[in-house]
Length: 371
Figure 1 (cartoon, rainbow, N blue to C red):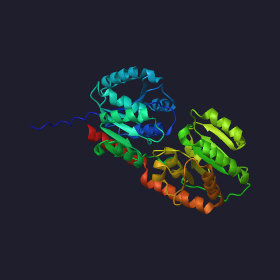
Figure 2 (cartoon, rainbow, N blue to C red; figure 1 turned 90 degrees about the vertical axis):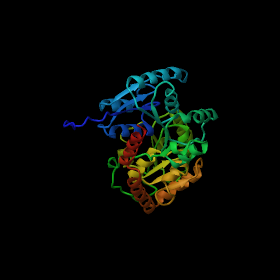
Figure 3 (cartoon, rainbow, N blue to C red; figure 1 turned 180 degrees about the vertical axis):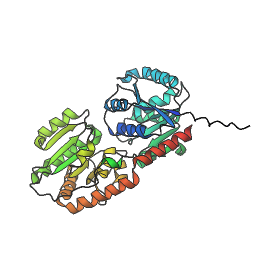
Figure 4 (cartoon, rainbow, N blue to C red; figure 1 turned 45 degrees about the horizontal axis):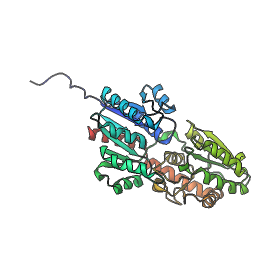
């Protein structure tokens, strides 16, 4: 006899989103966007920060999500982190751990030795400039993860060249909420008397190449003395970059804005967006600028060159070359036709290829596959 009652509701998949810290940053914002939009009828999510909870974590807590910290502030405390994570996974009956960056990737791999759990690792950049020790540790432990997700094809290629099984590597581009960004933009004519607004959104660390942008700006202001560079973001090089701006004599043309939660609004006021990175995965800031239709100048490295096609939806230059960067900035300033063309093309590309909805559904399919 068939049961006439309603079918039992399937048990939710319990997922732990693990990351090194929850301060404001591109990867952290991707995590937040994913957590907010996962199907709540199918997935139960806990967010865990290895370090004390930062601003992104507090924002998620205010939205009603469970956010916890392992309370680790030193590499020497790694064994304690491992034990605390194992206990958390066991007590919360976690089915899948998803991690993003090197420290949380390694931690998630080792925890599988203590508790039965599926692991999704992340690859958010390439191996350029990484220490040999870090690459070695990554290589010998990567097989403990069921899947590694790269947000760039360059990262995916590195994984397979290392010997990671192709069946365990996935390419899932980062996605952004297009609706947050202005769909209308004034590509105004700029003269030597114009207050040219140039923006860079990136953590203040060596990878992002701010120093080369500063040197380029020193030359730009010879022609456009009222040009202003808005540096959005914070990081370990903050004091050094302050000092460098003073030494170059550009301190009056540079505004350090720190971490900001209103990046979409800021982008609407930039005439140009510059990302002078030395290496990248697929940087969220680049996608945000594209969504806002801001004309982009970026270095032609890794994920940048996957997103930007030189002359069509942005301008690409070699990294570590202030003269080439200055030339590209000057070229863009002088031509509103060029700025409008690359800005509109970039906006169309991000709408078609980097939607947040598509990213979320791809991850949901991956979770279903693993369980």
